View 1 (cartoon, rainbow, N blue to C red):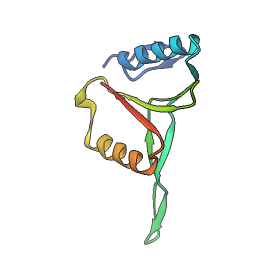
View 2: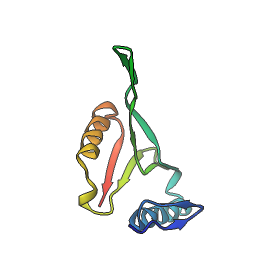
View 3: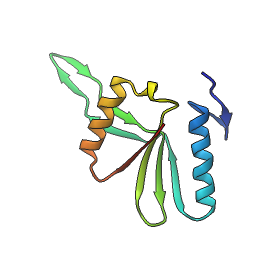
View 4: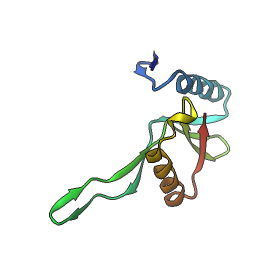
Length: 108
């Protein structure tokens, strides 16, 4: 996989970097207030069972975009549909269930 480096960080894919460039243009045009990279959402808290700690389950998206009209979009960029793993599909459903107010956008 080709992981480009730009803006002082390594991107997961050329497609993710290209999407970020697009968001920056929209921000420059005044349509976007804030772009957060790699926002993390708690899906399930950590817990103990029989003395063993089970780690929390988190969903890490690619972007959290806040538009000037107030709506917030959570964006996940997939280089291709083959990157939609079973784990990704389950976590995405848990995210949509736990955070129904969030607008979720998947870019393939």
